[in-house]
Length: 440
Image (cartoon, rainbow, N blue to C red; front, top):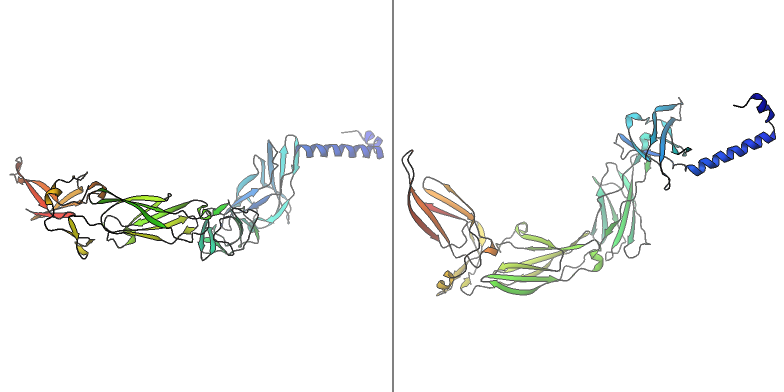
């Protein structure tokens, strides 16, 4: 500290000039070594949350910077709230519980950055914290074309909200479009009109709460690619029919690809056809597979076969295309005139033609596997046995009958070993039974 004499000696204009020069030099040093942080924002993620996020902008070139986050009251009583000061923060974001903050009175928020020996302070933000909400950016968005309009949906964040949408063609990224929407039950959505359904688009969405007085826009969602609507059903045809075994046919189906704009984001094809029972009437019981290719191979019996196909992309599905394959009766079998119900199952019946080559049938290949899930239950007078049909691909032709072998036991006296009797063989002519009963 200079002596009073020195102060008097240098109190003239020359001293003032020197002081001004020194101040300018110090200011330049601070500016060069520290870039002021961006204005701080503190908010909740929705109006019912009890946690706050405080964040501020930082220099992209800054390294080894720490921050002090300071809260001051702006209404009487004026004071610095020591419990609302967080120092030496390594990042430009902090999460705080509401019980550590003054929520319902105006507060002034500033951030001071420290870089080496230099320090600099942001502009202040004055706000009532309880009135500020910034919803997260939309995630898990879905798109669906309907009636030539594009509907976007995403999960709700709890508050009612408005949204802004940017849309542009995939091939023309200069076009934009925006729209304000209201909240629907549990799901936010917006319906876009005026778009060309045969073009692919990229869309982005941001949202803000309508339940508070100070609502901040969320960040923009990630780009969502929306393919064009699939307007036509796939043009499917039966390419080849090959007999791979007696009574088994290999069918190869092919179809044309959807237009390129409808393939944006990927496209698959869903095939639906009857299971082993060709007379199944409930579609939910039918086979359904999804493939990315433009062809598919199926092994079926000689019965009539029907197949439907739909093209599916991330924004919807086409109508169904159909193909029907006529039945091919076995040369030794003749189809009955009508289908009948047998034990509650809808089945097709065939009968041997008169004088059919029964001997030849005894020389056919045997199935590749034994009957599956063989089990039994016993009553006082009968033994009920059941098993699952042999899979189609393992039959190697028609199943003409099942043969059951069992051993007869004589009930032994108590605590004496059993005595085995002779083997007994029984045969059922019904080729596909699911159960059989043997009288004891």
